[in-house]
Image (tube, rainbow over all chains, first blue to last red; front, side, top):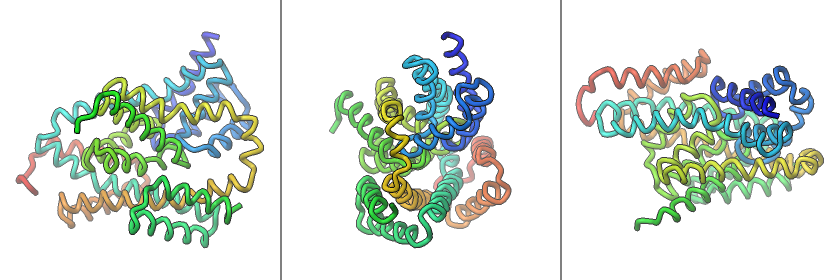
Length: 178
Length: 187
């Protein structure tokens, strides 16, 4: 039991500290640990769990960690896997940003903030493009264009809260894409 | 105007509960929603500070949503704020997953659910694109158009064309900014 918890910890700790690009990008690393190294489940089972995770909203890495931890070692397993996924990188984040905030009025840090902004814009634009691409493959070009134009009008021109626009899109999908 | 600690923690909890439950496509899809809550709705941070959170979040490994929730919760509400924001971001969907797993097997193949999931992607794309534009416009104001455009082009070359990891670029810019002397104030 204790060994299971330790393996669970490692299986989620390592992808969390070597994988870049957010949860979806580290799923393949989690699969290597869970399926190949520790053999908690078969590749097919992992695929099933992932598909179900994707059918639910919210961050994916923690859904996988929480569920697989629970399957392997109950509530404690779930907590260990979640902690291993979340805590190490969060601690680094808090330490670095606290350091940054201490010097936030220094001209150097101000300039740094300004200089990285175009890069962040590009990262977000690439992420946006990936979502458009997914939509093009899954829903087709016509529905993609309709949804892009409608959501742009509602969000930008009419200033509707994103939550409502997302609910509207869910309704559109249930009616026109099923 | 000042809210009690309890109210702040409650606001943090609700805003990350909302973003966690509305983001389809994993943590990165929640970035614009978090931005909306943190910068517009509750005004806990300005665009500049949120930009730093994103820059460091992208430079560190691991899931992005929990880094945002944990840090923003910590910054606004201290340790309890951090725990509350993390629980709100993570726990509901984990519990749903554990509770509904047998039900989900049939549910995920339902065309209605697939249609709903598919319709979210373009909306998330628009939200991310608007946020990208917002960051570009802000950097244009701060740096001037020529520098903002040059840095964007360099970023596209490094990140998209050469597919190097963005941490290299962000790291290089941070080191450059911190080790060289700023020319003039208000530049």
